[in-house]
Amino acid sequence: QVQLVESGGGLVQTGGSLTLSCAASGSIFSINDMGWYRQAPGKQRELVARITRGSKTNYADSVKGRFTISRDNRKNTVYLQMNSLKPEDTAVYYCNADIKRYSVSSYYASWGQGTQVTVSS
Image (tube, rainbow, N blue to C red; front, top):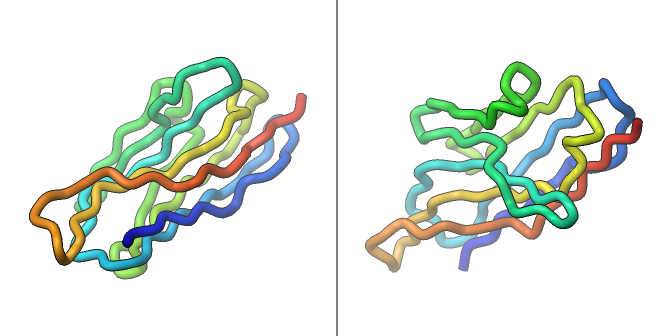
């Protein structure tokens, strides 16, 4: 069993900052890519940022220069530092990780339960 638990969401004013955290736990042998996605009401889930095990990153154009993704491999944790937040960043943010369990030969995508981020204008 593998769990991804997010924290750090909340309500913030335009221009403010938040940091999201996501910790993976359970029977984990290895984690490859980790990432953050978001889904606003009435919209499809979209990629926000991803980071490889070696810390190579990629970002959605809409967040470049404002958000920073990082990870701590010893803690199986990924972070998303969000600065200069805008109302259009309002969404449920989901953590994602490609995880190989001890009893399984392949990597599988796992998802967190989501954390709400609301940016007021």
